[in-house]
Length: 132
Image 1 (cartoon, rainbow, N blue to C red):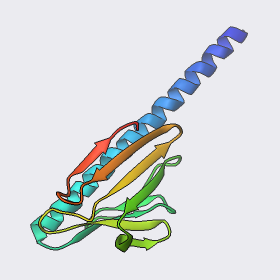
Image 2: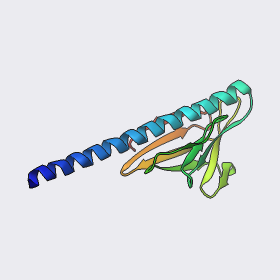
Image 3: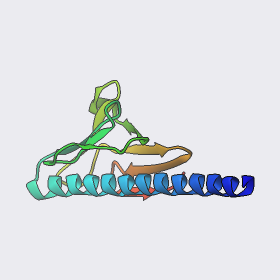
Image 4: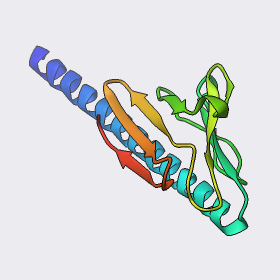
Protein backbone atom coordinates (compact mmCIF):
# COMPACT_ATOMS: atom_id res chain seq x y z
CA UNK A 1 0.00 0.00 0.00
CA UNK A 2 2.81 2.42 0.88
CA UNK A 3 4.54 1.58 -2.39
CA UNK A 4 1.39 2.40 -4.38
CA UNK A 5 0.99 5.72 -2.53
CA UNK A 6 4.62 6.58 -3.23
CA UNK A 7 4.11 5.79 -6.90
CA UNK A 8 1.06 8.09 -7.06
CA UNK A 9 3.05 10.87 -5.38
CA UNK A 10 5.83 10.59 -7.95
CA UNK A 11 3.33 10.54 -10.84
CA UNK A 12 1.54 13.57 -9.34
CA UNK A 13 4.75 15.61 -9.17
CA UNK A 14 5.63 14.60 -12.73
CA UNK A 15 2.21 15.64 -14.05
CA UNK A 16 2.41 18.93 -12.12
CA UNK A 17 5.80 19.70 -13.68
CA UNK A 18 4.62 18.90 -17.19
CA UNK A 19 1.53 21.13 -16.79
CA UNK A 20 3.69 24.01 -15.51
CA UNK A 21 6.12 23.41 -18.38
CA UNK A 22 3.31 23.52 -20.93
CA UNK A 23 1.89 26.74 -19.45
CA UNK A 24 5.21 28.60 -19.49
CA UNK A 25 6.00 27.34 -23.00
CA UNK A 26 2.61 28.48 -24.33
CA UNK A 27 2.86 31.85 -22.57
CA UNK A 28 6.36 32.41 -23.98
CA UNK A 29 5.17 31.59 -27.49
CA UNK A 30 2.15 33.90 -27.16
CA UNK A 31 4.30 36.77 -25.91
CA UNK A 32 6.81 36.19 -28.72
CA UNK A 33 3.98 36.28 -31.27
CA UNK A 34 2.59 39.44 -29.65
CA UNK A 35 5.95 41.16 -29.85
CA UNK A 36 6.38 40.18 -33.49
CA UNK A 37 2.87 41.47 -34.17
CA UNK A 38 3.77 44.79 -32.52
CA UNK A 39 6.93 45.08 -34.62
CA UNK A 40 4.95 44.23 -37.76
CA UNK A 41 2.36 46.89 -36.93
CA UNK A 42 5.11 49.50 -36.54
CA UNK A 43 6.48 48.63 -39.98
CA UNK A 44 3.10 48.43 -41.74
CA UNK A 45 1.58 51.57 -40.22
CA UNK A 46 4.88 53.46 -40.30
CA UNK A 47 4.28 54.53 -36.71
CA UNK A 48 5.99 53.61 -33.46
CA UNK A 49 4.26 50.82 -31.54
CA UNK A 50 4.85 49.68 -27.96
CA UNK A 51 4.58 46.20 -26.45
CA UNK A 52 3.49 46.75 -22.82
CA UNK A 53 4.24 44.60 -19.76
CA UNK A 54 2.81 45.04 -16.26
CA UNK A 55 4.70 42.65 -13.95
CA UNK A 56 2.65 43.54 -10.87
CA UNK A 57 -0.64 42.54 -12.55
CA UNK A 58 1.07 39.79 -14.59
CA UNK A 59 -0.29 41.15 -17.89
CA UNK A 60 1.06 42.06 -21.31
CA UNK A 61 -0.42 43.84 -24.31
CA UNK A 62 0.57 43.84 -27.96
CA UNK A 63 -0.16 46.76 -30.30
CA UNK A 64 -3.87 47.25 -31.00
CA UNK A 65 -4.84 44.21 -28.91
CA UNK A 66 -6.45 43.64 -25.52
CA UNK A 67 -4.29 42.92 -22.44
CA UNK A 68 -3.55 39.26 -21.71
CA UNK A 69 -3.21 37.92 -18.16
CA UNK A 70 -0.68 35.19 -17.46
CA UNK A 71 -1.84 31.88 -15.97
CA UNK A 72 -1.61 31.51 -12.19
CA UNK A 73 1.88 30.57 -11.03
CA UNK A 74 3.74 32.38 -13.82
CA UNK A 75 5.86 35.44 -13.09
CA UNK A 76 7.00 37.98 -15.68
CA UNK A 77 9.81 40.52 -15.55
CA UNK A 78 10.85 43.18 -18.04
CA UNK A 79 14.31 44.59 -18.70
CA UNK A 80 14.03 47.60 -20.97
CA UNK A 81 15.37 51.08 -21.59
CA UNK A 82 14.81 53.46 -18.69
CA UNK A 83 12.85 55.79 -20.98
CA UNK A 84 10.29 53.02 -21.59
CA UNK A 85 9.46 52.41 -17.91
CA UNK A 86 5.95 53.54 -16.98
CA UNK A 87 6.01 52.39 -13.37
CA UNK A 88 7.99 50.45 -10.80
CA UNK A 89 7.08 47.12 -12.40
CA UNK A 90 5.67 48.23 -15.74
CA UNK A 91 7.03 49.40 -19.05
CA UNK A 92 7.36 48.56 -22.67
CA UNK A 93 9.55 47.79 -25.62
CA UNK A 94 9.12 50.33 -28.42
CA UNK A 95 9.30 49.27 -32.07
CA UNK A 96 10.08 51.82 -34.79
CA UNK A 97 8.80 51.99 -38.40
CA UNK A 98 12.17 50.77 -39.73
CA UNK A 99 11.87 47.59 -37.61
CA UNK A 100 14.40 48.64 -34.96
CA UNK A 101 13.45 48.83 -31.28
CA UNK A 102 14.53 50.09 -27.88
CA UNK A 103 15.52 46.49 -27.16
CA UNK A 104 14.97 44.51 -24.02
CA UNK A 105 14.22 41.18 -22.44
CA UNK A 106 11.14 39.55 -20.94
CA UNK A 107 11.68 36.69 -18.52
CA UNK A 108 8.98 34.18 -17.58
CA UNK A 109 9.34 31.99 -14.50
CA UNK A 110 7.33 29.04 -13.21
CA UNK A 111 8.73 26.91 -10.42
CA UNK A 112 12.31 26.13 -11.49
CA UNK A 113 11.70 26.83 -15.20
CA UNK A 114 12.68 30.06 -16.87
CA UNK A 115 12.26 31.31 -20.44
CA UNK A 116 13.61 34.52 -21.97
CA UNK A 117 12.32 36.52 -24.90
CA UNK A 118 15.00 38.86 -26.22
CA UNK A 119 14.57 41.85 -28.51
CA UNK A 120 17.54 43.25 -30.40
CA UNK A 121 17.65 47.05 -30.28
CA UNK A 122 19.33 47.36 -33.67
CA UNK A 123 17.15 45.03 -35.75
CA UNK A 124 14.09 44.58 -33.53
CA UNK A 125 14.45 40.81 -33.98
CA UNK A 126 12.50 38.86 -31.36
CA UNK A 127 14.01 35.55 -30.19
CA UNK A 128 12.87 32.97 -27.67
CA UNK A 129 15.38 31.17 -25.44
CA UNK A 130 13.94 28.28 -23.46
CA UNK A 131 14.84 26.88 -20.08
CA UNK A 132 17.67 29.21 -19.18
